[in-house]
Length: 452
Length: 139
Image (cartoon, rainbow over all chains, first blue to last red; front, side):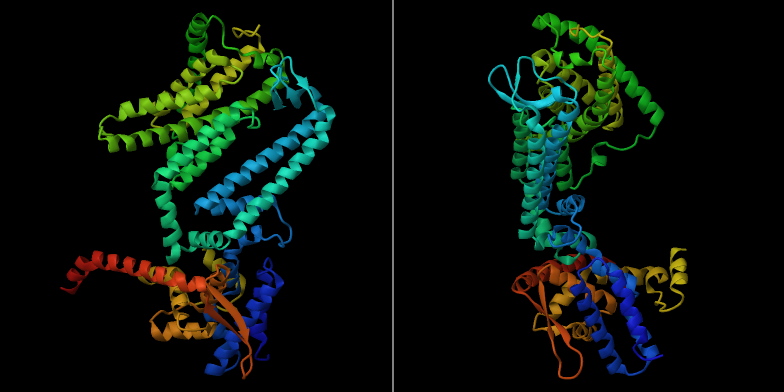
């Protein structure tokens, strides 16, 4: 056996394990390590067992390869020349970036929002093929334009559809264009701050000393009023955009994203605001179902008649009229109900916003000297009212002022459920889902007031 | 268990010294400690001029008592290069193999003093914390 054998085997093994890196880089690494071993060998002399000892100090090939590859994941995701680009890898890479830097957070927001819009366009184009009546660019009676992707709801009455089947190629094209622009934009943003993300991603793992600078900046930013201002602006902006029909489908996914970002930047997770599997499933489901049924009963027997008397008419649920006797729609709606409404809205309104508003209230209180800690109950109730108004507002579209009042009240009840259950989300999630399910089933059966 | 399995697989080619897994807790903690500060040590060793990998290792060993696991230095250098703190170039040596020399970039040169300050702050505050512990230990 000649002297170089152990070394050659070692380097071959390492090369094989470095598979994902660019070939030039692998050659570079191998040459450098070969130089290291040869020079060490000259230093101490000896044959095969000396090489063995030197290699041993270098570590096993798999460990070396793991170290070399550790920080390349994001870099490869951002490298346009890297083979087999996948949007998923870009999202994963930027998501990791988002966990360690504010810039990454905004890049992530941009990326997901862009992809969401792109996917919406494509879904609209595809939907036209088998449900032509449900999709289109509508000119409303008032002369306003609205791009509707009414998967479950029919187009607004008295409107005129402008695109016809042109929406199929146009939608696909628009989807592709938005996708392309988003990808390029995020990559260029990430490329410009390239050193930062990689450094940051590396730091997140290694906990290196140079964590200090950027992390301190991020922490200072998050603690500053600017962060809160930006956050409030984002929430208000989303609401305004939604009111102008600029948000495809629903603003809940965006609020969810915003909530995730906000929590993440403040070093929290959804778990910290109550999203966790409950300690006792049976009890949680029992309470949730009971509360959901009670809520809907209360709505039907008390709020509904009250509102009807107050406003002279029922909450406008004409948007849901198509549901009567339509089993398929009922099932689709159930899917949306449990994902977007039950989980999504509870996470956003109770998990994120309620806690955030209460936290800000506490902060303000302690500044004004009102003794923020003195009246936690007042604080929570205040936050609950603010968030319930937002919750009602979110449901204003299509349900009118009475619908807003009713949803706001339901939001208040769900918030109380959240607070009463030790700020755990499981119960309000179940209650929200059950309450909506009950309402939808009643509409389906044609038994809901104001539907027939 | 997992470790035994892995060693079995490798078929006794290169067995590593069992520092990591079953050494006493102090040694294990020291390994972690060094790993976290190694990038600072490497950058510091490049402060006065360019060096190649083995020279960096030698400097770390001679000028500090940092017993560095050699394999970690090269990947770490690659990372520092990726992050833009150091630059690398191959230089043909008169005798034998070309060597890959590393030097601090301008960014690295600006960055290192900040790291040093952060480190000193950290170590000073830790020292303060340890005063009572050491006082009792000495007695």
